[in-house]
Length: 167
Image 1 (spheres, rainbow, N blue to C red):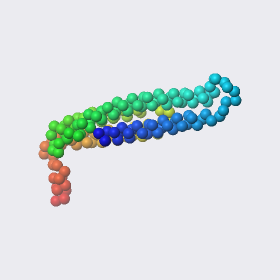
Image 2: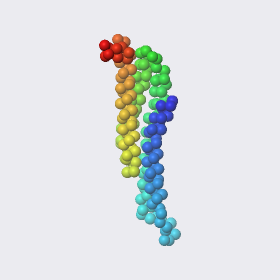
Image 3: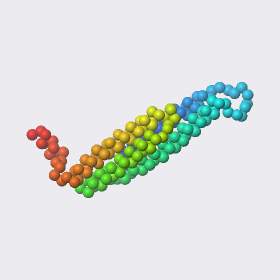
């Protein structure tokens, strides 16, 4: 559960920081006082409103991708927490869950890459995409390891491997 919460926080934190940067930029631009009480927005205010709307749209789309991605973490957390010490069906189940989670991470990275973020959030998006790809690689590697151990009962355990290397 803790790993799931940390993973979600790690993905959401850069997005929120980027959003705050855009919001801070938006509020700092309005320092001038109007010379007349004109209700019509100035060109810069209109542009700022468009930037803010684009940021809101992007954040909504990125949040949707984030929610879909983290939904898969619940079943993965359950599968991993039930692993037995020796290879058995729990390992096969965990390997299958990891492959599904890896596929979800790959799809999320592609979906995120297809978005066009506001300029201020480009670095955040790049970081999130890299984190998703790293998670996908880790899940693939771990899932492959568990699958090989389940289907190859002659595969030596860690102690045996170390003993073989030392002697």
